Amino acid sequence: PGVPGDRSGLNADGVVRGGVRFAEAAAANDDDVRFVRRSLNRDERSAATFSCLLAVSVFLAMCGLWFWHVYLVLTAQTSIDYHYFAEKRREAKKRGETYQNPHDLGWRRNWQDVFDERGRNWWWLWAMPRFKPHRGTGVPIVVEA
Image (tube, rainbow, N blue to C red):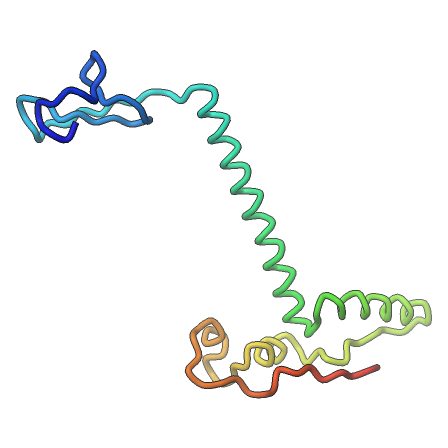
């Protein structure tokens, strides 16, 4: 019903067919809008519930991955390093020693090294676009402990 007075898209009560929310401009006054709300049927509720559960599940999975990678950056590790160093930590614990990751420079320096940001504003500049190239070659340095 795009034209005032055209009732082809309206049901017997004068309400637009289909959808969850409806509006109809009254024939006498185009500025008068009436809102009618109906409840969802069972299939629509099931689809909405499924969509919400799926969205929340994906959000939680992404949050878990984000926290995992922040942890890896703060401790100067890759996922493979994490498992390798876990084995080294177990072996050192059996001997009564503590294993120290040879790449770990402290959380702040690790973050700065990974994102190549230094100076006073490193804590927010890492997320900004860069106009100058990064330092280094991008080739990892292998240190066997």
